[in-house]
Amino acid sequence: MANKDDRFVPLAEVMRPHGVRGELRLKVFNAESDLLLDQEEVIVREKDGPEHEVSVDQARRADQAILLKLHSVDDRNRAEELRGAIIGLRRSQFPPAEEGAFYACDVEGAKVVVKEAEGAREIGTVRSLTSYPSVDVLVVQANDGGKDWEIPLVEGYVAHVDVDGGVVTLHTLDDLER
Image: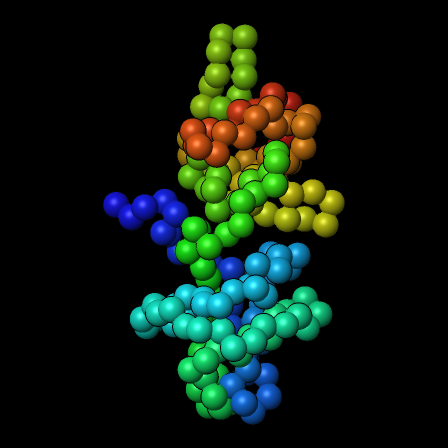
């Protein structure tokens, strides 16, 4: 089993070439993240192809996208071949999370429990984190096989996130539909 810090974390998808000198226009999965702007190397997972580390010549913002120039991509044709490829990093390349914060990739797969008078009841497993304009939510695959839960990441619902222990503890499920 691979070390948790060595796992590949997808951060963006190559949407199309930008210009004629091999620059790539990326759709960043977390539009607010600048993580790709400061990297010397990234991992490229080609569509139905190999995964390889590639040196970054330059990265810059362009509205909600990032324009990325990879060392080995020097023309529009090679850039076009990478359309649909996934750009990511090893988890170990991320800076430490701020106090009280966590990365979405660190809670995927965590079990989700609800505090009850009798103790804690497990309701499912974190599938992903989704950002809506008004709130971020944990998408939780329900243990009972029903529809996924969408748990708002607010203090009224989330009591504690234990990244190291792989457990998200909720105060309540009241007023949540699925």
